[in-house]
Image 1 (tube, rainbow, N blue to C red):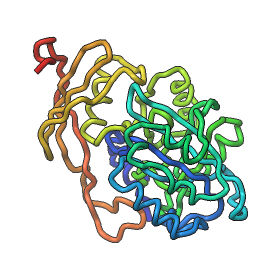
Image 2 (spheres, one colour; image 1 turned 90 degrees about the vertical axis):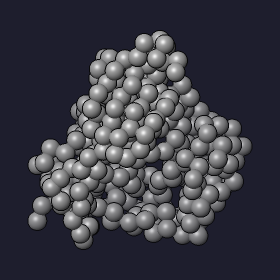
Image 3 (cartoon, rainbow, N blue to C red; image 1 turned 135 degrees about the vertical axis):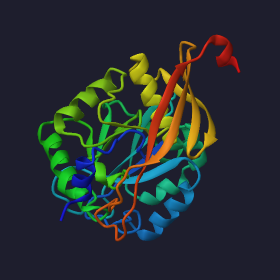
Amino acid sequence: MSTCTTVSRSLDEPVAATAATATTWLLLEQPGPWGARALTSSHLDPAVGRALERAAHGTGVRIALVRRPGPHADRGGSAVRQVYAAHTTPGNAWLHGATTRDPRQLLDLDFAALGRGDHRTFGTALGGTRHTGGPLALVCTNGKRDRCCALLGRPLAAELGASGVPGVWEVTHLGGHRFSPTVLVLPYGYAYGRVEAPAVKEILRGVREGRVVVEGCRGSSAWQRPGQAAELAVRSAAGEYAADALSVVRTDGGAPLWEVTVAHTDGRHWRVVVAQGAAGPPRRESCGATVLGTPGRMDVIAVRELTAAASAR
């Protein structure tokens, strides 16, 4: 039986504008096995997992579990765990790290402040400081969520780890199983689909140089899906790949048609028309799906640079 990934590839389904949305990512190291809903179905105390889900709801913070590539032996509950927080909004992108022996400490965070990009709560609650070890590459490997993530994600994570690429972690869920292997790169928050190890290395090189690789890019988690489509379209049209250069500053309309305004730090603006369509034909959108569906897709209809007068309106 075909997997959701092979079907998506055979249909040449676009990966752009399919990234999960989050202004801030909060990552907690949790060794051992993960269930489909990892915060409450791993060896993390499920009461803590449920409390973290409640605390993050509606704040723009997305919580995920991470583990080192390789064998997944579970360590004791008192082991030191790595914690990261990363804010993805251009002009204020940052990545901070901390350690903890007690995941309940994360409940002391001000999640609303984290979602707004205020890192001070991370320092106060966890003693966190700015991460100086380079960008992170998070490879989705949660086979209990979708088998493609294990079949394709785990070998990629293992290959990157074995070749000495720093900052590689396995992560619980990035969405878009059918684009496996999927990778999220922090701090800028760009997601990628159908990637191989050489592409990940180039993507990380780009992050270190402050630029975005658009090949295979699903979009920035800082924006909703119409904004993801618009920003990537402007990058390609203008040949602008500096990570902090572009921001989505306005979105008008609603499904199935939006007008998105993208601004450059140099004062230029673009208006991008984005239409919602369906990536047919009907099929299982994930390997675990029991019914057929047609995934939504974002199609860029037009990209127009605005005059100074139009930009001011």
